[in-house]
Image 1 (tube, rainbow over the protein chains, first blue to last red):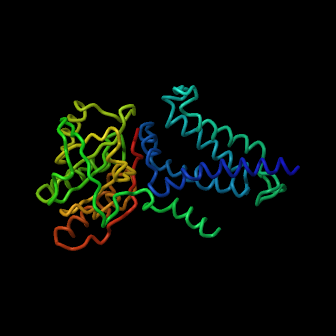
Image 2: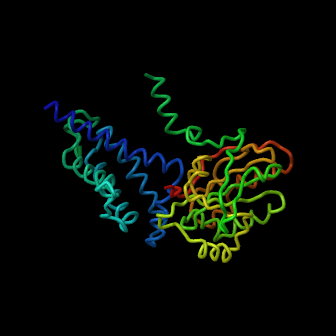
Image 3: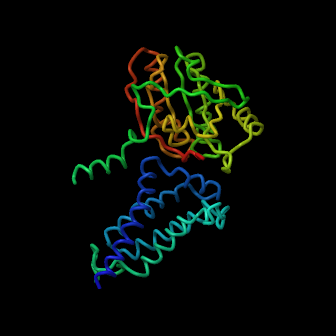
Length: 133
Length: 198
């Protein structure tokens, strides 16, 4: 079904690109607030480099449609860790407009899980037959 | 099409798009109050070299340079040659915001030796300079021109031990300025925590 494949491509492309921009910023300016969160949680700073997997490599895989489900799971794990370590203090904080402060983070997390469940569709580098795609 | 793509990519990667304090250009002027509530005007320091250091003690990258004594040592080393201004652009609502009382105590405990500590709570100065991270360093020459914009050094870590082996861009630039030479590395990509703007 063409419309279904187009929908999957659109979801992958948008989710992947929006997260990738965060990864690019971390490549340019360093780990930044990831290091702050890890230090506050008492975790080793070296773990911070995993963010490049979750916000650069995985989104690229999702955009291209190569091992998409695995990439999407990595993105979801990355977002879950970000929510717990970086944002736990205001996890359900409601803003004056009625929405959650962390609405974008939640969208990223669950959109990534949705992509992991849906797969890449035919319009992808890995195609319909690749495992984890 | 290619042109549009090239433009979009360069917009993503180039600092020039964000930075408004461009080396070679006049430094954006500002009036802001310091920690004791006294106004500080950039103009007042015309004829002197000014260092701007974006600061936030809630940031491990800043603490790397204070816990190692690196930043204080620089502030003291150049105390006779430059006016060292620490600028804090953290907004009041953020967990990193600190009230003047505890902040003064922490500055004292760390032995910080900046000339003034500027409270840029609305983020106006930070935005005008395109300050991206803490720390983010700017150097303004006695003519009021920006001569350096970027990182403090080339080891982009939170590890205090790295300070010893890093190439310090601020030291290099200030020494060149003092020797009357042009600053050879006038622009680098800063590293650190994001600035907690409003």
